[in-house]
Length: 274
Ligand code: NAD
Image (cartoon, rainbow, N blue to C red):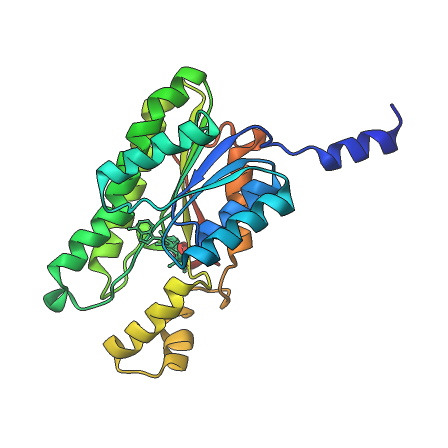
């Protein structure tokens, strides 16, 4: 085969062709960025998350058409363990055995601990931490049996270091990293890897909302929150993009990720190097 023929064959090869991926919280932000990247690599997708049904349907169709892959959607509320099991069962029914699970759905609330609403604590722990446990529990035995699996937990720089006013979020994200390491060790000989991606600030609707909340908590303007609160933690002084997170997730799912497990991979512009 000529060099040109080999090169063009390499270009069209999609490493995740035939793989089935669930990405939680993929109607928006980082989850959508990861879903787009996995679909570009050829994966069949099950999307999940809240939002306007017509907009979600448009996203589903666009992803399918652009990438020539099947794309399904589950509206499961991940704060409810039985809905998580239903989502996994639905994914298996419509798409087949699950190869890739990305636990990405997350919520945030910013308030001093003395004023932190207990209901917000419970909700953040349920969506940001417990949902990953329930989903992993439902897919892991079958991944191990088939000898391949990729579990990616979207944690945060706040899984490694803390900031004030984010008690529930920081506790949940530290928990996600502990869960990641445990799953990696339990699965080490099975062909299943489990890693955490730890973004710093990424420009998404979650961050946009947080800017307003932080402005209230710190009694500052929103512009000041961006420059003096958020990006002061991030030495490269820029928001990461959802495409950057998607590219890392796809790498972890492909052949290059086979020996990476139990890792907390930072995409934080140097935040946690300080
Ligand atoms: P986002 O608000 O844009 O997206 C969150 C997604 O989760 C949405 O699809 C939403 O519908 C879904 N979701 C929320 N509650 C849900 C529930 N109960 N059931 C099902 N789906 C639910 O936020 P984002 O910034 O893209 O964040 C995604 C993940 O990345 C979160 O886990 C977040 O903690 C993490 N993260 C974000 C940043 C950042 O700067 N944006 C940084 C570090 C970590």
